Amino acid sequence: MKKKTVVLIPSLNPDKELIKYVKKLINSDNNIEVIVVNDGSRKELKSIFDEIEKIKRCVVLTHAVNLGKGRALKNGFNYFINNYSNEEANGIITADSDGQHAIDDILKIAEDLNSAKCETLVLGTRDFNLDHVPFKSRKGNKITTAVFKLLYGKKINDTQTGLRGLTYDFVKDCISLDGERFEYEINMLIEAVKRKINILEPTIETIYFDNNSETHFRPVMDSLKIYNVMFKKFFKFAFSGLSSAVLDIALFTLFYGLLDTICGENVSILVSTIGARIISSLFNYTINKNVVFNATKGKGTLIKYYTLCLIQTGASWGLVNGGYILLGKFIHPSVIKVVVDALLFLVSFQIQQRWVFGVKEKKND
Image 1 (cartoon, one colour):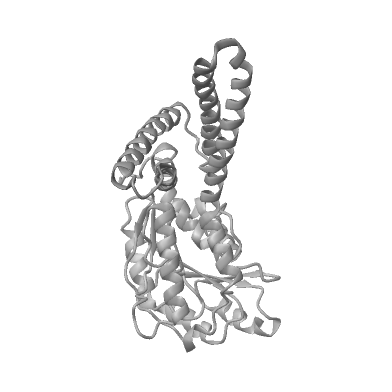
Image 2 (cartoon, rainbow, N blue to C red):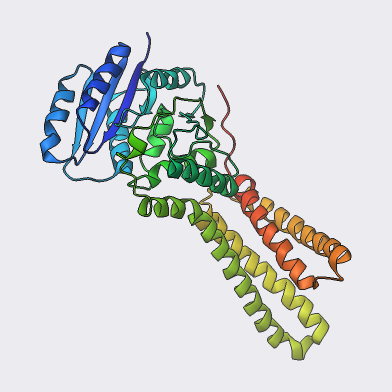
């Protein structure tokens, strides 16, 4: 028996076109069922949701006040999990309420979702190079795509698409993700990349009405929340590294002061350096494992971490030495080391995120 296609539509202050859109969606396929979330719309618009609730195979969930798109999606996901089994529906499709997602594209996402053999996130991807795409949408998405690629090592061509298909197991995982507004959708992408979930990016029609004037996206506040979500882990990583460096210097100073009069200068420096580095590196490993990357694995990550440390130390020496040979006449070695170590720091973030503390890649059945 063909499985159901469940479409979730979060909505805030829609016009009557939403009624026509839902009817057209329902009539496009007998297996489609729709969940609409009224996210605290104005009271005078209640009649719109009342009409939608009368449509066959459609249910309306209502927030007493506006809670944000992220909360609307999570509550819709929760309703879906509680009312559908994996045998009834492979997953759920999210779509925006402004009619910017063509019915044919929703059906295309449904096909990809139904053919998925493992946990999958399907992203309906728009073409932002088209002439009718608003400037702020084009530039905003390209910047977010570039930043996401830099921080998480994965290029997502449309980071802000609202047309998404989530397989059943991934829906359950997304219910507990942070985020109440548009930043929630970025958290969904981060979770998918972190867990190496299969991501598909089929091209969809790029539709904008009236230069996207009906959007509820707040350019300043919501953009700040989105970038805060993306940079949060990196800032934690940077703070961990800085804290470890301060601890390393403090311990070296302490050990050297205790040993200098006993062992002599050369031995004191050697022992103090090794002792301080062992303790500070264990501190850094612990913070990165439990706070930055929230890893659950143990001994294997420790071995990988110290392997990376050795390689990074050798790379730093080799690159600084090579840079000094090439540029030593023009630039002080300390400047070369700052540049080299800064680049290695960025590389280390990616390697720790994807290899040291990462999860194993999902495999197809």
